[in-house]
Image 1 (spheres, rainbow, N blue to C red):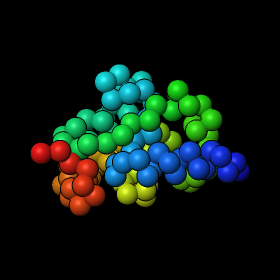
Image 2: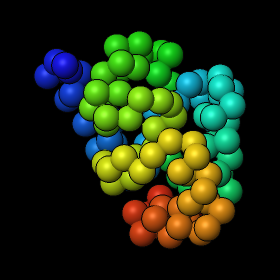
Image 3: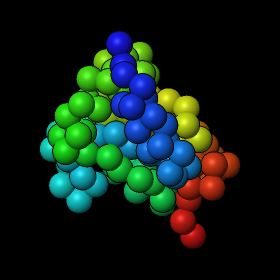
Length: 110
């Protein structure tokens, strides 16, 4: 169960940008291969996204699993909705779906 303050903080992150990636590490220094692959897919789409390092906020690490009903990291959200993890994001990147989703959300740089 997630406490109200943690839920509010998650929502604040999700409201802070059209695309939010909860990941292990940072885009410049991902701390797992799945996070690195997801960042690469987002960069391939020229995505403008906010990254949240779950290692810097350990209380979010478990809370996000319950919030999203998704057990692993990274977790990509677009317009506050969970898109999925590494395999889904990379697959969507290959098919062109990710680019369209991000563009429609206003999360692509020129």
